Length: 146
Image (cartoon, rainbow, N blue to C red; front, side):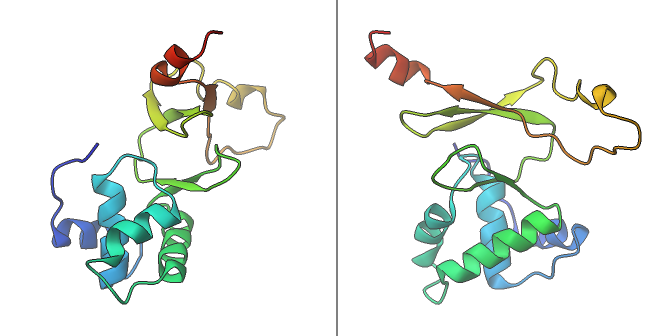
């Protein structure tokens, strides 16, 4: 699923708001995350961007994503045992992972997200919550008998 095209200035401003200096590579990676809500991996981002930026390396993509996560411009999802996935959606939401096809979808307003904060012992400060659901997507579920 692809959103509308985002301008260089919008991406540059988004990065600046997260105290990330804009470079050609950083803008391209951030734009990809903002325009594609597919929860891509490093390899997927590299494959998509390498044709337009032949000097781009997987290491640069990895380091850019690491910086974006550290600065709060993106989040890393560890829902898949095989790959880290990345998401630029900042609104509170959960994720569903199909363990058959690997598709990850966003779930907005899941009941109970954030309800655990009041159960923490005194003194703990929550800075983030990641809620994952796993199972089969409708397409994969329809292919199985159980």
